[in-house]
Image 1 (cartoon, rainbow, N blue to C red):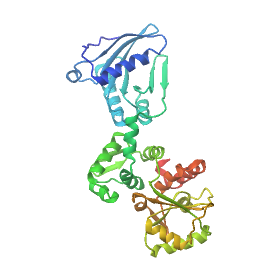
Image 2: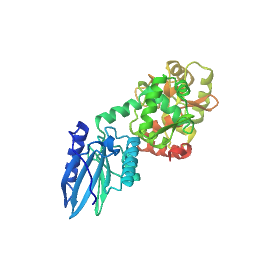
Image 3: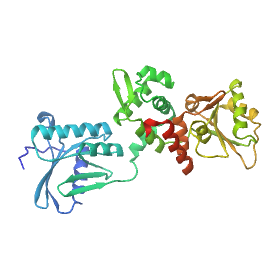
Image 4: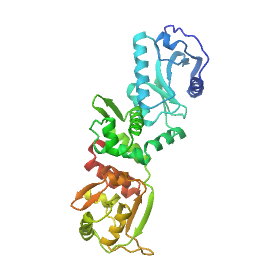
Length: 362
């Protein structure tokens, strides 16, 4: 193995944690011993991306790990690190196994490393490394608190306005001002959400504006973190069903307020799959009054067959679309999200809806 000139410097906090995590991980590999593990100095001056160099011996054969450490493990950073490591190894003719480390690597970031042929390890214990006859892959369930908080922020009601606009037209490139106007949010929020989407490789920026690059992964992540819009929920009873109920709804067009079919009831207009005896709606206060008049609703002690949610935030209502004269339903994206939290039958209906209307999400 060729010589590798290095000096040792005091480790930063992130480098120290990374070196400790790497030492602990390598210690679990049978027949592998660590000869030296140190922090690489003068990275900028020498134009290399390596933070940590681990000289090891595996079954009598020397093996070097060249590790880049980042405080941010988002997919874009993982891809950049993989490119830099492979470029450095190829240009310098150094021998070694490239590896990327960060406090947390999502499944998407891990997939990037696998695609690029780079090992990885995060502080949560997710790991993958392959060399000689060694192949180790470990997955840890759950996400650390900072990642959960970041995702909750990304999918908050105001932020979700932006996501709905993007997902309803995923091939379009949006300028910041256009997107802010369409989503009815501030330009600052659009910029913040845009940065978060690009970090995760869900979007990219071009001369025409920002566009989604992986709407499927974005929708999947949203679905796994989705909570229905907050607001009052009213459970009522109507003697109307099916076509009779639909005919009465057509009369809502000239009434006050907004009434929007939701969940299974919206899916019936897009991609019927699951039979349901309950009708689901979003509405504002005036829309609820309209429904009560049109459908002659009552409030039974039990046996309710109509559920109306009055959301605190209007994004879900603004996102709705006309599916028939006088009949309005949540968008396919919103309908998919609501179905996904409605039990096994709802998930089946969501999958059917995705196949029918969300071809980009397959």
